[in-house]
Image (cartoon, rainbow, N blue to C red):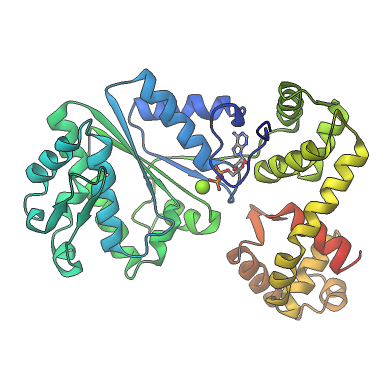
Length: 378
Ligand SMILES: Nc1ncnc2c1ncn2[C@@H]1O[C@H](COP(=O)(O)OP(=O)(O)O)[C@@H](O)[C@H]1O
Ligand SMILES: [Mg+2]
């Protein structure tokens, strides 16, 4: 059986990755010149895939530049953060296993009695450092990349995914201050910080009172354009001996509102249903089936919302422009206009809505469609 030419839910690599030419060029420039960069977009728009792509390309093109990637999705406190930072920096800058040990001995000597290596278990370092000790002494770890870069005469870019998680550490502000005060002194290391919660990251990076204010260049990652999706979908069908016309491909992109994850998922469903030529009926059936598959999840999510929150979603889906007008407040039972602001904020915090400037949109286009057609029946 031939492999399905569309992937979702994991990093898009090689032929599964499309476009992003401008973003790739810009990130590569930043990485080469060691410019700190902050990237945000809602989840599943392609940040992880983009940074991965850029690091793969630079790995080949720039041997003197090492890229280290850390994912904070399962990092819950400061101690875990230090451990993963140390581990990833050591590994990204070593070609051999012994080198990891040597660098650790050299640069983390104050912590070394508690760092253990298991040389037979490749790539496994465990840090037996207690939180109390680490808290007293995180400096060596925070400066590890710079120390190694200077010693080995290389440049390093440290990429940190799901960076918004640091706002959930016990003392987020003190922690951010600590990071910033170390990192801004680094001359051979740049940081690329990215994550999904736009509102949280905006707080961290764009408020003048915050430690990370003006830390680096900010990039808002957009969706991928309809035109690019049409050629990508067409090509992937062709390569696998099937066909889809531009209108049908465009329908897939529109139904998924150009949302990278959903375009791939819908395209996959349509591809699986197609024997030779993908028709509009196939696209429609695939979209229905996708909505059905997610229905259980959406029902659960919807039950967790308050009446006010549901009222606001309904108003938005009905195309209401003036949410705080007397008529809207009454029609959708939104209470007061102060309440509308609170409802908006909660729905943004819950990752259901996305706020760009004044513009409120649904983060999940399939959820929006499900609510409109199956729940509110608008
Ligand atoms: N450049 C791209 N080309 C094709 N598909 C992409 C691209 N970027 C993202 N995707 C699709 O979106 C999904 C989510 O991407 P990911 O990089 O994990 O997003 P994020 O890190 O923003 O949550 C991927 O699994 C893939 O299906
Ligand atoms: Mg990601």
